[in-house]
Length: 400
Image (tube, rainbow, N blue to C red):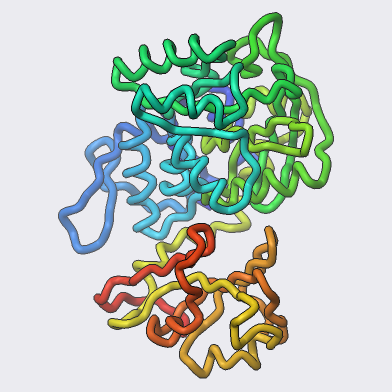
């Protein structure tokens, strides 16, 4: 495997470990400065230049995109995706995870428990928002920030109002989030690779500091995760489109709460705390997945006018309730079931024998007109299905 690590810091611990782990396994690896790429948009085929020369072929990349170059870094990763080069860290995953508001919107949509959060703009809405998340103390977060920067604990409503007003006056957007007091300055970093947590550590704040980040002096200790914590961590990473991620969890009284999903998690803290070869696990995973680059379904599906993707909710009145997928007649109506969601469990490519129950959600591709009768009435806001009209232009690569 020929691998490129995209990093501006070749001497950083994480970059050095990834390079060493790849070399130990016999792979060809180079560290490429993300900012030295030029995205070539002049040809009919997507391409990249590096340091002014045409980029040679790579089988996979490992992006280590710092927050300060998120926009350009995402563009470079996106170009690699267009070139069918495998990456466990997708451009969409980087975009979603770097924007705290966007990431919370995505996670909450999929039933991932998060601390109560509000996003407001008008000063008059601040106090109601503080009340909505449970009252002071509250945590105030800048939408873009790393390593605990831009995270403030407001002890009372007046302080919260003053802090938010000050930040907004400098054109900063902020979130108001419930303070999980039972967590007591501690959180768990679960390191997810693929569909499992390969390492986990508990981080604890020092002294009066409530932020547990290692960069802020927090201490670490190895922790064995409860299966529910592991399940939530893996699901959060996958929902964000990340196959390598650091998922930060709070230990709430009712179970795990996802605080953040990090698309470029550091290796020094987790390897130091656990003694595990996390870098090696990343390289092994990439090598096993290199033949399956990220595909943009909307670009690859061969479609014509009238076809699209829809999420259908099975209600008590549905005529296919209690029937198997095979007996439902969906295929005869030119509707293919891509995934079946039962509660929080997502079943890809479900078997035709699967029986449909109330509350099941089917992600389908097919004729929109044929799916119209299965779309529930728009009565309840949260029950509305997502129907996505695909572009009319024919595109190559669909599996019909």
